[in-house]
Image (cartoon, rainbow over all chains, first blue to last red; front, side, top):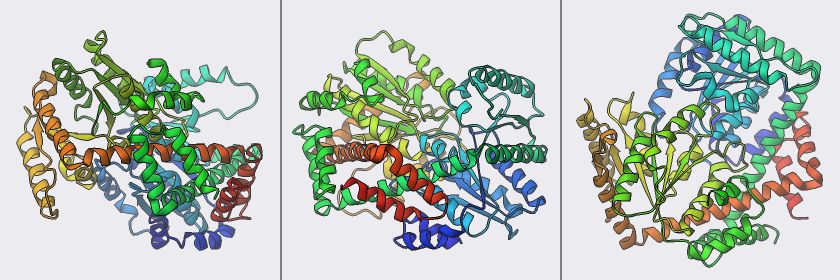
Length: 300
Length: 300
């Protein structure tokens, strides 16, 4: 399995056959995204959810997405070590994804890795990513259910989070709920949510706000309950199929774009695109006209 | 100018004419990238470099790249406010880029925004981005010169930074150099650099390590000196043309890929890609076969 995932990360030419062989076995796993700002306690929360899911007898895979940063290596290594208690459990698989340098990056590798883990029989695939960086957020919101983690007293807190969080969260978790300010954070979130709900008509999912103290393992079952309710809602409304179709669409598009990019790189042995770059840099050609020539090259 | 940049960020259909009109006027600005982990003092350092460049009479534009995170709004707003002293200076232009939700995102909007600022006559375009997230790092390393900022006592520090920093930095700045541990950080960096140099043959750029205390404005001129030396090196070796060709190549490719993506979305009014997604989600078709169909659709 680890080797299959390496083939995905290395963009192996064998992926084509592998994807074909695995496709009939996919669709059984629940894909859960977990994200939040640095310091909210994502790794501890992942560890807590792992324990809670294992107690229910579920087989769980974790895809921990490095923000692909040159600066993050150390911290993430630490995170992985903290998950040590699950290291010897055959019902748990943890993969830290390093996608830096890949064309297409996360959008390309993550859905395919989730597909592998789904096909080999995991009940849950948990995608954990820090909520910084566009591609990281794009990836996590393609899950069946997305959990957004906050903690009290985090800088501008909920206000800062307002911009994009409302749209991507299915479930909010206020972690470190034993700390000062937890009530205020929950209240701010609740106010924000009821304000935004007024704009919505028709029956819709009401994002719950769950409190946890992940470091003491408190609240894991409450998060799982909220996830179970969300899953039922997804099934009842047909939204699950919609999300999975959308995820597959994004995956297909990412593969196709990468294929096109490889074709660009291959046009006249790479000379075509290099020459177009040079002409643009020299001010002879504008980049749109150059892009037109590149795309036209595909059709010959 | 602000309106031109909005057209870029909104992916306006007028970009094509604008790019054509601006192209002959580009190439005069130096494009400088500034990146580093959270907490290294990027905004303060940007403000310091702004002052130092203004003292040399340079017109300076700053593109501050939001990590496109739902969580970062507040912090970045704060950063912008700290640049207040330059707010009324007509030789300074500061733009905070919000690219979340865009197809192609940063890779698409940043080089085009830099092109606009170059064409309208800025001497320096400073691209400031937090070194988290693949696309953010990809963008900053397409500058003429890339400055990587570190500070003493930052978690795993230099060790954590090792992975990707060596390749992207032209100049290292150890900020907060008045703090404990600054010497150790400089030494670690220096050791790391001399170890990596042994593997290089031929005359090459030796990445300097500059100390600053940006909060007190100390070291700004030293950074500018290092940048000036790097610029001379770029000119002498022909590397400047190489980097600019490569930047233009990446820009052309990003525009072309976005164009292809728009064509995918338009195939049969978007039905083609949606149906392919559904067939993959239903397990009828593997994503590679689906991508083949999508790419084949381009050629009809």
